[in-house]
Amino acid sequence: MILKEGSGRIPMYDVLVVDDEEPVRKLVAMLISRRGYQCFQATNGVEALAKAKTIRFDAIITDIVMPKMDGISLIKEVLRISPRLPIMVMTGFKNDFTPVVAKAAGVRDIIAKPFSLMEFYARFDKMMSDDGKGRE
Image 1 (spheres, rainbow, N blue to C red):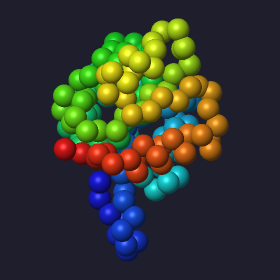
Image 2: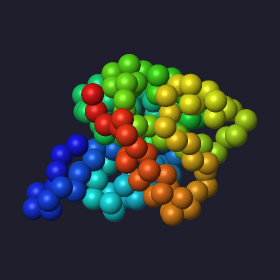
Image 3: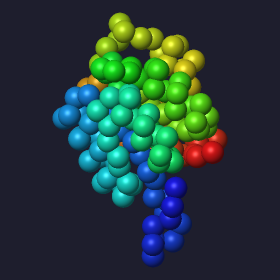
Image 4: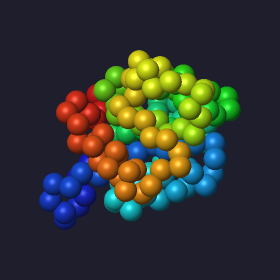
């Protein structure tokens, strides 16, 4: 996290959005960017993990069902690098995983697709304001 120049103490987060569905990925990236945060994108877990090894993100928002590496595997690998990193899962597949599995993997929040803009912002803001968030 860095502070925006000339804006006092407003944090500038680096957020990674991971989803193999381009429209969803771009929408979430746009929502994050509108808040003034730096947004990075990845199309699958393998690409996301490679970025997480070179960039210190303040948060990750990821899909669960993706090619090459699913979201749960990604979460486990990323949390080995940065154990306190806030991670939100987006999913449209209620039968492919359970919230218990996601929470056990270290997810801070889960949001079901489709979601409203208000719900997304409320959950993202809460995740980022929770105690214990941030980089290691």
